[in-house]
Length: 129
Image 1: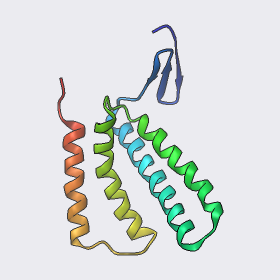
Image 2: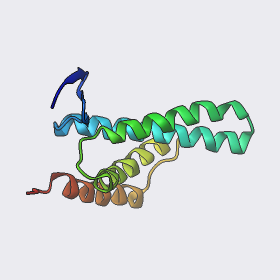
Image 3: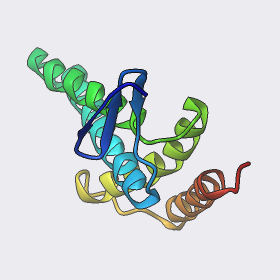
Image 4: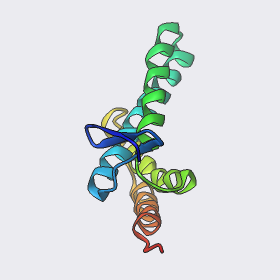
């Protein structure tokens, strides 16, 4: 590598971006991405159902930040990042439902979250050569 620049936990090199590789920090990025995606989608949901056109602006910004954070998760495959993120997104969506919408998750919601997080964990923590 001919040069590099550290910005927080992301390293920008002349050949591209090398992302973080610490699992705990990767999960922070996954959960951050989930928060931005849920917020962006909720803004669109509200804009369509209630009509304020200005809600599209924060929606677009949130969805752009979601994509940026997901790109920095450090997985070597976009598909694998999407798969791991899917489990985290499902868990974050149920938390959103409970906290923002005040809808109490039932046992099936919680069982589904558990199954998805186990699947995401298998994909994320699997030993790879």
